[in-house]
Amino acid sequence: MRTVIVTGAGRGIGASIARKFLDLGDRVYGVDLAFDEAPSEIVEAVCDITDPDAVSAMVERVVRETGRVDVLVNNAGIRVEADVIDTTIEDWDRLMAVNLTAVFYACKFALPHMVVQGSGAIVSVASVAGLNPIPDRAAYCASKAGVIGLTRQMALQYARRGIRVSAVCPGPTLTPFTRRYRERLGDPEGESAAFAGRLPVGRFAAPEEIANAIAFLASDEASFITGSVLDVDGGNNLVTVHVQPDSY
Image (cartoon, rainbow, N blue to C red; front, side, top):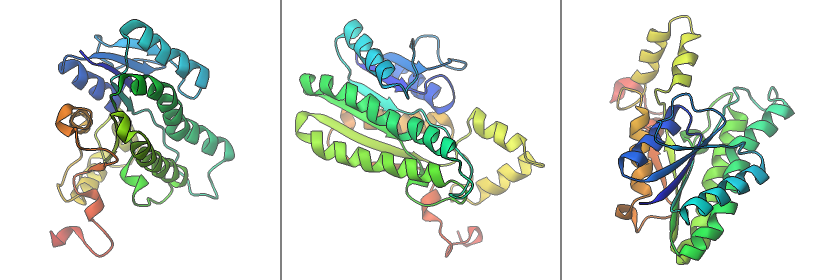
């Protein structure tokens, strides 16, 4: 039985990730401040991931109770919708703390145990916004690009220690956050259909599809994969200004 840590496990994609690893027979520590949608079988670890002391204590608890950390999934994230001019310094600092610095904290404190074990897998949730820019997402794009850069550096650094480090870049996914966002629009169904229609596959992802990709990258079936950044986006990054939806 592997020991798996999933941050942001309380809802959305994180809850689906936790459920996927439980289905695989793993012991899952779900890290969050609240667990509204998380499966009841997880071990709840209430933790502010922006507090390095809290993250260190959480990892030490996991190791104390199970003796190891086999998989770390950095999933927690927030979003700020603003360009550089309109992004407040407070919003920038908060988003970076959650989306990027917290990934550093979790890896910093989990990696020494993986080094001792001589094995481990880290999968971080980046975004298509870390690869291609999105209007009014200045801080978000920057943070997710940072996650990708950190992922690849760690993959290189620890490859010969038996540790694999990868990232996934989800595209539009049907989470409770997405649904609430669409509900604020004048025509949520119409807006959702129009947006999905611009994707090559013609639909949003289910959270379980993101979880499946993460589980694969953390598995022995991906034993020769490290430093990879996997698009799980329904072809989102294939579409450019030169390609219109009615052309495919």
